[in-house]
Image (tube, rainbow, N blue to C red; front, side, top):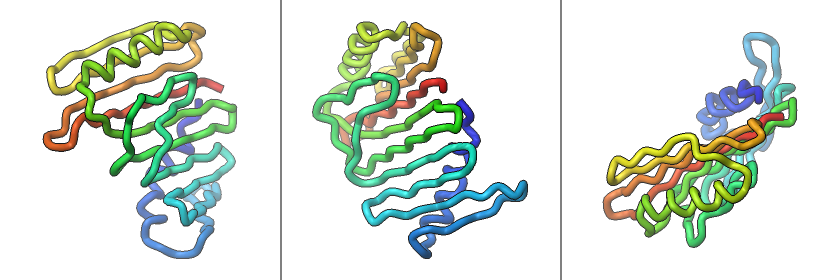
Length: 166
């Protein structure tokens, strides 16, 4: 998957946050144009010849690409969703959300869900207040990393990074 569009989109997020019109075109040093479209629903979309990235804040969808299921009962307070689609058809997503469940419960849920749906567990890490799981698709066409960390007074923050090759 070509991540150039993702990186460019992330670097331009500060420009879009400064205000301006609903759609703005930026030209990079190589002459490539990036269209930035701000929606009134908390979304900002970046489009170029390399692909498209949409960043969403506020009420979020906690599903991920590649068959990764949503976490039951998750909330999106102060969460973030970044979805990207590359020119080659690959896609990726970074999602952040909260739950009142422990990091162990979150990682256990995803371990069970992923092992039964075409993923192999590549690595796990348990650091007490923070746990991580990395899984690869059995077809070699992508993977997922899930990190669950206790945030004092706020529950467990979960970050899901998933990608599928094009």
